[in-house]
Length: 348
View 1 (spheres, rainbow, N blue to C red):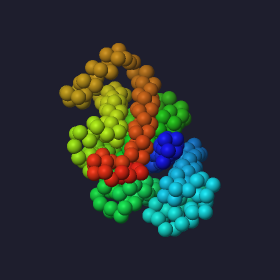
View 2 (view 1 turned 45 degrees about the horizontal axis):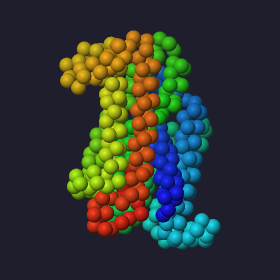
View 3 (view 1 turned 180 degrees about the vertical axis):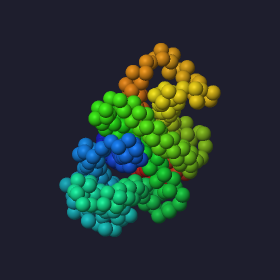
View 4 (view 1 turned 90 degrees about the horizontal axis):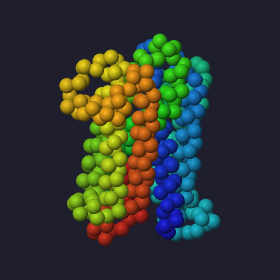
């Protein structure tokens, strides 16, 4: 693959990851944050904005999946673009990637149908909720099944680790996208006297989801690193390892910013500052925040929260960019054995 094609494939994979993460994170936000908080406070959450956002992400995902299919077909066949369509049926029918791609595209169509049906009356919302969650989780699995380990028939813990990694980063980073794009515009619908309480409940619900996802991301990331990088020299001496280091470096400030929301902004919104102040990390978070912002007024906490998650979401985009680049590089342990590959063994 030429450098220009490699760059384009990385770009397509990045957009694919963004769309997938935004969609899956949007599902998590909808069913584990927005709707439970609205239901507990008797606030209507109905409206087309959620469905429009989800449908847009699925449309982008369909486009990037088709483009990725063309790139992979060109890599496998070695033919120029004008001749790809003659070999596409062979790739789709006779290769592992083609079979996974068919399932992936079918799940995208199914999820589009579910979004359409959600706007209809007389249908069970519970059935549609479980169906969309199940299809979304399987959609994430297709990303892991498209990795090199599964391509080679290696149905080891690596695929499961990739799946956990994809799900965890989607719940966290995709949830941040949903908070910034949807919640910031949904809050004005809440009566002014209940707005602070609603925001507090939403932050607490999302931070619980995010902390769970960070735990899964850490465990699966450590396992993936152990599988693909067998020594410190391979970590610092290969392009794959350097991008992996950059990815983990970017995750550091994201975790810190999440800690600020959970352990500084949330207690102040709840008027429970003394509950967690004895914790050593919390004391340091408080010192750093108040050194930078000079203890913001209570009226400015909402704006501070949304500024912080904007920064966190931008860092998340950079993390997904690192993940997209890694998928196009041979893992260091394979390079050290002289087994060059066209792409990495894990999805993100």
